[in-house]
Image (cartoon, rainbow, N blue to C red):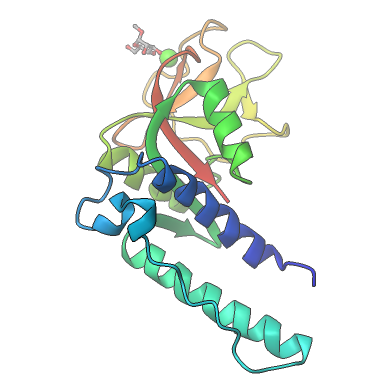
Length: 197
Ligand code: MMA
Ligand code: CA
């Protein structure tokens, strides 16, 4: 059966978070949720007993129901944030720009790239929680001082801090400050990994 884009998305988020749980790297993140720090032999195995229903349509509906419940739990616990159907997640770790792009790609997503104030806020939640700047999926174009989304095209939304971008070609990446504004910056800082799915 083909995976729906929604199922694909939530599975990518789940594996992203789980891969770090398994390494114990999420310990410390959301300490009120001790299951994140549990050793592998103590971890709860989810009950994946199929619900009755032989037709593909039923199966898809049931999967969608289960996904929406999972999303509800993740959202409630602020393990993911969401804006307009786009999901954002962090593992609480830091990396430079290239490593962040790679980590997000490995997880089946991409580096967080806000397209409007709602998405900017969804990323900002993690930046504030960890009190750590995050790189965005925006880079200087071939024209120094002009920025564009990683996958090309034009920036239709920006949230530059006053007098930014200021690097005049010397600062090729973009970081989000803890007030949600943006600064062009060198790409080699250790910033919070925030991905979108
Ligand atoms: C730093 C660096 C720049 C930023 C300025 C703002 C001195 O350089 O973070 O990217 O524009 O601070 O003062
Ligand atoms: Ca700058």
